[in-house]
Each structure stands twice: as C-alpha cells, then as structure tokens.
Image 1 (cartoon, rainbow, N blue to C red):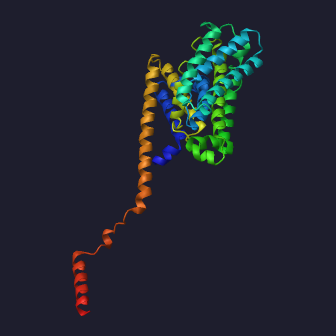
Image 2 (cartoon, rainbow, N blue to C red):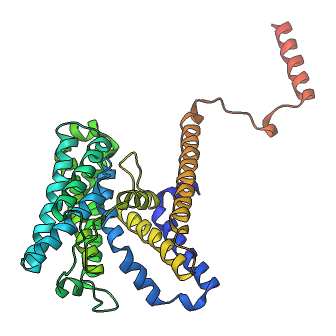
Length: 353
C-alpha cells in the first residue's frame, strides 16, 4: 500500500483536489461549478509554468530560488518594450530571450563554476530584482496595449490562448520526460551523477539546459501575469519561487533529485491555487491563505518523510531476510515425548554399536 501511494503521487494529489472541491460543494453548493474549475485554472497558469520549469531543475538535484525575480524582470521587460512601441510578437520573443539568458546564467554558475545552486540563485535573485527596479525606477508600468490582455481572454471552452499554450507545453514536456532518452537524462543526472557521467550523459549540458528552460518558463509566467492584470507592479514575482518549489514537492518531486513527474508538479500548482480560491469563495479573510497553504505543505512533507522511512524499513527487511535463519514451524517441531523417544533410540543404537 505504501509503495502504491509513493509511486502514484499524481493520483493522491488529484484526490486531494477532488476532496477540496467536495468540501467547497458541501459548504456552499452555489460556488462550485465548471466555471469555478476554469477560474482556478486561469489563476493557476503562472504557478503551473513555474512548477514545470522548477521540475527540470529539481530532477537534476538542484534548486532555483530566483524564478520569482526572473518572472518580475521579464514582465517589466515586456512592459518597457510595449510602451516603447515594439510590436507584441517581437516584444514577447525578446522577453522569452531575457528569461532564457537569466536561466543560462544561473546554469553556468552552478555547472561550470561549481557554485551550490541555492547560493548561486540567492545571489541572482537580488541581481534580477535590482535590474527590474533599475528598468522601472521603482515605478509601476501601466498603459499596456489591449492586444496583450486579449491573450488571456477566453476563446473556446473558457480557455484563453495562453491557457492553451500552457496545456500544450504540459503535454510536450510530459512526453519528453517520460518517453524519450533525452528526457530520462534529467532523471539520471539527479539520481546518480557519477553513473550518468560514466554512461555518457552530458551532465553539465543537461543541468545548464534545465536552468535555461526554467528561465523560459519564468518568462512565459511574466507574460501571463502582465496579460492577466494589464499592468506590472514593482514587486511582481515576489514569493513565487517558494510557491513553485512547494507545488513540486506537493506533486511528488523529490528535493534529492531523480524522482517525480511534471504532471504531479502541475497538479500541485493547481492545488495550491485552489486553496486560495476556495478561501475567497468561502469569504474567509485573506490572511488565512498563507497559513493554510503552509499548513497543508507541512502536512504533506511530514507524510512524505514518514512514507519514505516506512519504505526504507521495508526494503531493508526484505534485503536482509534471506540472511536470517529460517524458523521451524510449530507443527513441524517434535513434542517433548517424541524428543525423549528419539533420544532413547539414539542411545540404544549407540550401545549396540
């Protein structure tokens, strides 16, 4: 049972989502509808993109705490370009390039300069946040063109063009990681770095690529953010890095690398966003959001830790069971009278001999 739960974290996260919707329906049946599902999906798109990028980094046994700052820097870059008269397609491509360059820089620091990922990305967190404030002078960017907001307007089945892009990216990355040898390289690097290197996996290239894709996902998140609200505050992206990591952990991505799936990370992002949305629908004060989300995450971490300990004990028990002497079944053991008779017969035979 424990092994089944550990190997199907996506299913357990999905059951948690269904259970939370069931709670919402029981407490306020008017609040639950297909429109609610679409509303939460729209709100979760930013965190889903960040969780997809964080998945690749965490699979290689690294962590990136600068994605919130990259998101803010990319959103600001998009706003500055659009207000400067650059067309929407070109501005979006340039913004994507900014995110990739920021992610590449993180990857180079970690893979080539051998700086621990948490240290390197803590440094770039402040660097990218400072660049963002330098570009804006600490002011908000407003007056963005209407064409940008149309990217988040529902088109079919309540899904916007950017929402459709998120779904396509999820499907593409799921196929890449689960069905291709290249995708399995990310797991190999995080599971056994030396073993992957001996098998010919380009370890440094994979790690740099993971950070670069993470930067690209952060850039897309910045575009979605600016598109949804129509302006860019000077604190855009603050705190999103912790939520992205929390979403991955909730979905079964191991902090030790080499374990988990991108589908679980996306479901974790949806679940975290769902908590905030359900609290709003139930008209609870906003200051409960972080408390309840943190409490849920802590419960999942404790459960995950206990689950891993139980699995490790079972594996050790199975590993050493063959070295332990086998116990004779009670039914096969001779009774006391049978034992005395056997000893007497052996003594008589010895006397005859």
